[in-house]
Length: 87
Image (cartoon, rainbow, N blue to C red; front, side, top):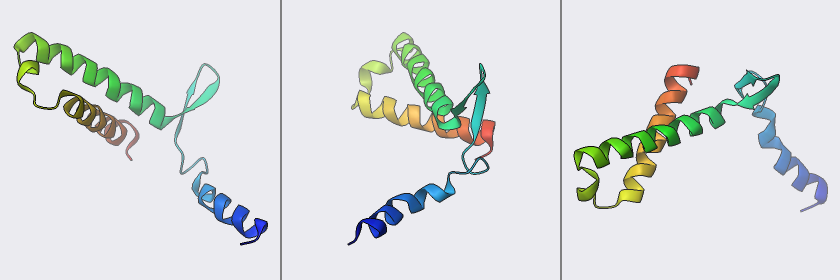
């Protein structure tokens, strides 16, 4: 495969990264990607849920805690993306 075809294959997926396809948030004069805000919301939500689970005693009976909290963080991040950005 020639170098030009390799570069075309590598750069072709970037064609979808236009301002209409890649939502960004203006914050302090800079544009941050929306997925970063969703990731932060998901992590913070999972940490808050962990504190609640420890308080009510559910954390002790979870079989795979790491997997449960990662899935909770992903669910919160996806919900945040859906309801805040409509995507």
